[in-house]
Image (cartoon, rainbow, N blue to C red; front, top):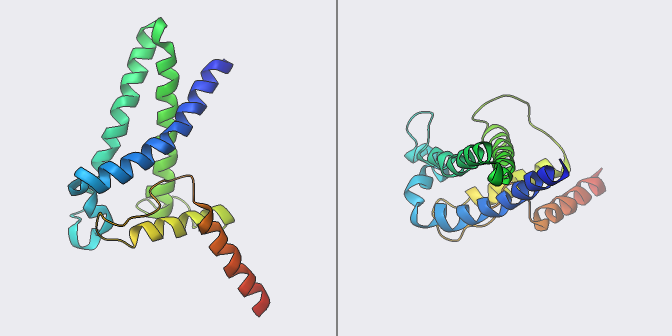
Amino acid sequence: MIVALAWIIVSFLFMEFAAWFTHKYVMHGFLWSWHADHHDPVQLKRGFWEKNDRFFLVFAIPSALCYLLGSFNQDLRFLLFIGIGISIYGLCYFLVHDVYIHRRFKWFNQLDNFYSRAILKAHGAHHSKKTKEDGESFGMLWVHPKYYATQKSQEKVQDTQL
């Protein structure tokens, strides 16, 4: 049980790197044509779905394969737990990115805490660019400390004004 949980946690954590790498070098690289409508939805998006939603499959297919191979072959059981870790990351990514940040689904109200404000700032900085070049903040759940530091300095200014 502990080994299975370790596989799940490690694969979940690895997915933050995989998402960052894919976002920076694939989405903002050779598959920009799939991702561009996400950065400029007013001009490029048609209807509810974005071409960018295709990336769901980029991550769902390996997860599904891990489920299948790990479920049907005892020697590959660890793949089942890797698939679970990928799925949990995908769920978190969906909830944070599509539900919380972009409000594509209005399932809960705006959060207001230190971490959620930093995520919004980082993602806002990323989306301030409408082209594939000169991007920043490609991860999802890990937020660069500079977005927290900016918050702290703004909060100090607000406190001194009171």
